[in-house]
Length: 370
Image (cartoon, rainbow, N blue to C red; front, side, top):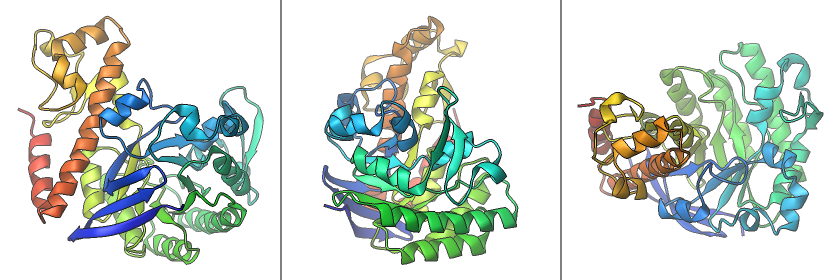
């Protein structure tokens, strides 16, 4: 079946809802860990379930190159291939080719995007139709339209031409879509320009996708600009379908997004930070390599994750100083659980009409380290 979304409660613009998928029903707003190459770095599916993960994101571009969509299909689809029985969303590859295309004026054409493989330098062409074909074979629960992620800053003319092309690509991708058990999300672009965001949102909604994403954020713009991009678009998205803000994982950004009516987020940030000894805590981010943690025999945080239940800051610091891989694994478990628990707390606050109180209380602690 296609996914279904049920809006169950609102607190201001913040939304509490249910996402019904072929692999279970889950509450929103939610944070989705990123498993680019069919795995969330360093973690097993069992560990993901233990931290409360629901939807996991994998990437079309990377799986196209390795191991190839046909191999995944032969394995029985992405769920069986990576042994994850929860819902999976596949990103279209648009962001990756945006970052790999060297000359945007020449490499991004009406046909698609010409670029070179980051693995062996082989010339490649990814089109809207091919992106959808790959995702149909991967058989994720949610597929994404192929779009161009507009860089920041960009001129109005560039953003306008890119936004119009993304709309044409969305139509081509939707026409090519053939997996009846998979859902397809449209992506709103428009850069930092209010009229383009409105136009993109309205025209994308006319195509009647199963959900909608706000793309082109978190690409170098300041926070206020990012929040304006969301504000410009979200008012034109339907209430009865999920809304997804791509590539956002800072706690303050999650709060701002939920306050504006976003239901779904993803980001590589929690695992990337973890590999560099950085941990989320209720009092802000800390770096375990700092000498002050050498004899700190307390847990990372007041947290219910496996790491905080079993290990101290001193031991975690030791692992990083000794260059032991277990340190990155343990911090990844904690950082992902931190964001998922944060979303759980937001959902509880929305259900009690106390979201703004929760937001203030969280940020007061997070931004004022003891």
